[in-house]
Image 1 (cartoon, rainbow, N blue to C red):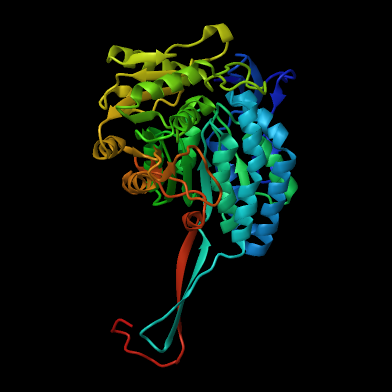
Image 2: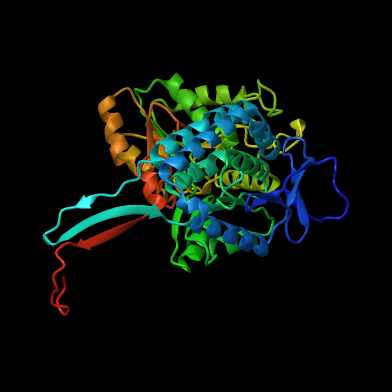
Length: 501
């Protein structure tokens, strides 16, 4: 939750953050700031610059200057050294960065410290690719020509990131883009800007030239819109809702810019009658209640064989009712608050709609005012149908919708009955069936007898309304480079200028 302020007297009791432009920590050119609310305590805890289009312009100029200047002259070997150094600094500062994310978004410390301790692996992995970005020599039917390709950085990247897991989702873009030789202007969510702003200090300490990475914050939607449509930007990398992603793509298209969109999901977890139900129940808990359900890959649709429906619901609701909710900083807390008030109200609205459409609440279904903050109880809905709103739309909260199937054909049809295609899981002891289902479910990531596992070396992205392009893995390098073809005439002979060569 944010509130715009005019800067007058310093707000010394709140932690202060600055934007990062051209290697310097700076205020917004307007002098405005905004405060960020801790969703657990309900109190404001930090102050960040409330930037505008003029700050975006300055950041894009700095990124372009760096691309055409010192950064553009570095070799892949030089970039690799800087990426490894940045990875080391993230590791050294994992505790502080994790605490900032807990304060800003209400995510569990136990999750964020694990996430931040693993995050350096992205910078190490892509540092290993920075000096291996290669072209190829192409055989030709024209013996008087040598033909080869080379890969060059796409240019200035606008990275627009969401309020859930800010640094992880930024790193999906930043590590590979820096390896490829791009420069960045980053716009984090106004609901959780602190950890991204803190990264500016680490980028400077790592030794990146000024302007390679720039960070602009602001409350007004026009800041992100201005960045996405900026004529000085060559690519937009966005993570967020499908509706906003469509608007970002349209803005980028106005400049014929490339886009990578990692958008929403409505991922199925298909549980067959032969599955280990204890393991499946644990996977369902991980898929939809971890991170308070605020993850694009949330396994929010339980599609379960009718013969094991009742037993699986019993196991899941029993565990859901035992989830420890409370202060996200405490090591034994298992679920924290919803990250901000607009999202809290949105989730409650979906629960009310589900009730109106005839769903049965097996557990949860309401907010928990006794804890303070923006808490919603872990919710399992049964008696839902594939056409219900809670099944069709992304809730982005701790809500699991369960419905049944009779055979494998029906399970596959229900799993694919969605415009989304980000992720999914299959729970079965039949390895043949597991592979068949993984082959036929239309989604970018499928887990068999597991859920919610990611890595820098495994591509991640969606089908359909879940996005465009891939982050992570070798494929991600292609998203941040352009291919140039070079023809070299070898004979020196003169040819007919009016014939195609």
